[in-house]
Image (cartoon, rainbow, N blue to C red; front, side, top):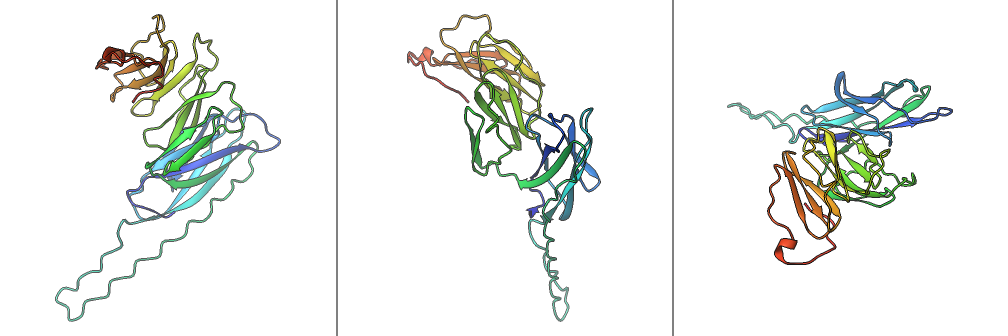
Length: 301
């Protein structure tokens, strides 16, 4: 705070279990701007959720986050903050029409200072806090095999697995379309959500012939594909399955999946630069077709 009209702001809520409670809460966190509900976000393993809003009116916006509870956890009272929103430009001084003396332009009112987000009162089971951060896509993030996240430039940090010791190493991270969150993908097909990234399923309990090597979201962020080294494709949410290489003998393992812009198809990329197209993805060529021999391709875009 402050932000400006037309600028997207991310509100983040962090749910924590209050002693002596134990376990991982499920359910959803509801975000409101005043009396208007702006987001209802399902909880993921990180217990951190985000909500994006683009305020169109200037002035103080009272943002609240409320955990509705679940079968094992009671609801937590609202946590709130006041987001100050200013006009992109200050008010223009009115021109005095043929008056002897032009009236003085009124002084723009001082924007109220956003108070620190209060800690949610203790509930029998959970508590919630909420923070706000303007979205700035001019940056990038890097993730380690242990799930630690490093952000640079304007990339927003939405949480990590640092210290959580995932069962299998993290092999990929991909952002939501609005950059308000990200998914981490583990080699065993486990999916971890942060920020406004929603959980649509995983392969964490499925026996895999080959490890997962990557993933990619759909254009609207309401689904994703996971790709295994043997070319097996798994789709979740609104991601459409267009075919796979699961029964095809490959000279080199698959290392990446690249969806088309409309999600109507995808390309699978092999370590030798081989390209396999499915759905409306058109084959445009491959590295082996150029006569060049490589064995260390690691990705594609």
